[in-house]
Structures are given as structure tokens and as C-alpha cells.
Amino acid sequence: MKRNISFCLLVLLVAGCASVKNNLSKIPHSTYVCNKGEMVGNTTIIFKDSTFLYSERGDLFQGEGKWRSLPGGKVLELKGVMETRDRDLSLNQEINFNLQVKGKGKLVGDGCVFLRK
Image 1: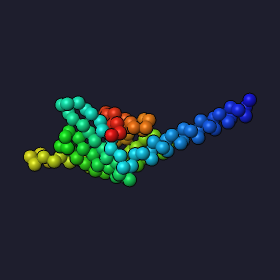
Image 2: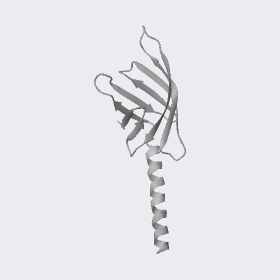
Image 3: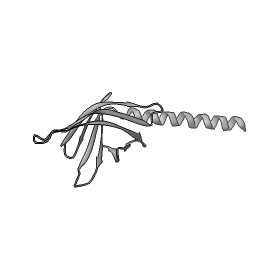
Image 4: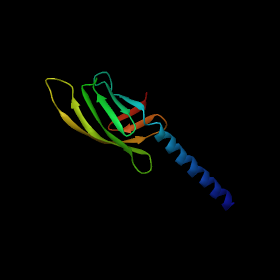
């Protein structure tokens, strides 16, 4: 009986690790969008191999930076710089937040639910 329980736990552990690995392997070269409503617009993150492009409010704010998976593979850390694209207004803001990997096509964090596009 103990042998069956140990085997079942091993199978669950392997399946769980494979699931996290598969979810993370789909992050590079993908686009995630958070719809913040008609008044605010979309926030978009385009992931590359280890970098990302970030835009929000109809591309009024655009940025870029580096991303990495934190140990355990369930959280992505994004760090970079965002600036405005308006001639009359010049603002720079730091991008520094974590996104939780939730399922196959969902990232949650920074007040948004990002869905894979």
C-alpha cells in the first residue's frame, strides 16, 4: 500500500514539474494583453528570449527590459524602463513587477490579468 502511495506521489510530482516547464516554454516569443477597459485601453507585453517590450494606454507609454523566471517557475520578474511617446510630456518610469504564471495562457500581476494573444 505504501508503495502505491509513493508511486502516485511521484507521478503527481513529475506531472506538476512538466506542467510548469511547458507553461514557461511558451512565454518567449509570445504576446500577452490585459484589457483595462475602454477608458484606459490595453496593456501589452511582448516576450522575447530574455527581454520584453511593454506598452499601455494605446502606446502612450512604451518600455522595454529584461525578464526572468524566479525559482520554482511560477513567477516571472520583469525589470525595465518605460517612457512616454508624447512630445509635450516626458516621463520615465521604472518597470519592476512580478507576474504569476496561471495555466497555459494567463499571467496575473500589476493589477492585470494578461491573456496570451
